[in-house]
Amino acid sequence: MPPDFDAGLSRRAALDRAVAILRAGGVEGAGDARFLVLGALGLRAVDLALASDAAIGAPGAAALTDALRRRLSGEPVARILGEWEFWGLPFRLSPATLVPRPDTETVVEAALRTIPDRNAPLRILDLGTGSGCILVALLSELPRAYGLGLDRSADALDTARANARANGVAARAGFVAGDWCAPLGRPFDLVVSNPPYIASAVIAGLAREVRAHDPMAALDGGADGLDAYRRILTGLGRGLLTDGGRLLFEVGFDQAEAVAGLGRASGLAPGGITRDLAGHARVVALARAPVRAADASPGENAC
Image (tube, rainbow, N blue to C red; front, side):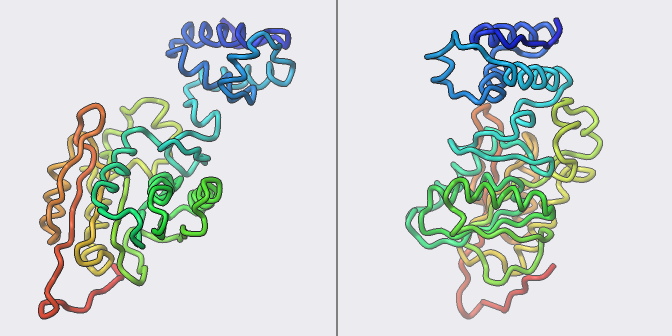
């Protein structure tokens, strides 16, 4: 079935046709079709519900035809739309950023559970910030916190800044270019990260939507998928985490014990493992135990 739309089609008929086209092309139909119709036509869900008989018009027909062709080629819905929702907030995407996924909301949930006072003036560091989704979500829940997002990609940092502005937290968010262990001055109370954790040899077998459209730098975690965790733990061990501060990692479904072991080996205390909605161990929490003044020694911030 060709992914062509006529300007005279009603919104409801266009949605039905989009569902049929995607199903015929081997793509799960209803959910993707609805997102694409709303995005291509610039509609809200209520617009589709209350004015379903309105014609889509020539611009709408052209936009929807293009969107369906891209989806049939394997491009993810979020990439076609250029934005996606995370933690109930809108996030713009770019080729240098991952699409925010529901699994990653587990990082936000787990981090918030470690904070007894949400009005505390915390310092948060997000390593490999990408779209900024984790940091922006946390700042939306912590009104007196200040956050810093670190990323190697200038494109990702531009996207993250735009997302902080769009979600009203730009005054409390900074974004800087740097590697995992870049010198960052004062230590942080909370460090979060969703680093690349796919083993290099596995990437070729990932779904086409992932391997062809997600940035490779955000996927490839080295031979065993753990390279970024080792780098980050080395840096945090040199002064980037306050006494009593918390570190939370997103991990692959089978990596929690390995990452927890790396944390223990680096001198951090275990802080628990949180499972996602599918039951997979998704977040590893670690903590830097408070030290007595007599035991404290000067820290370093460079790798």
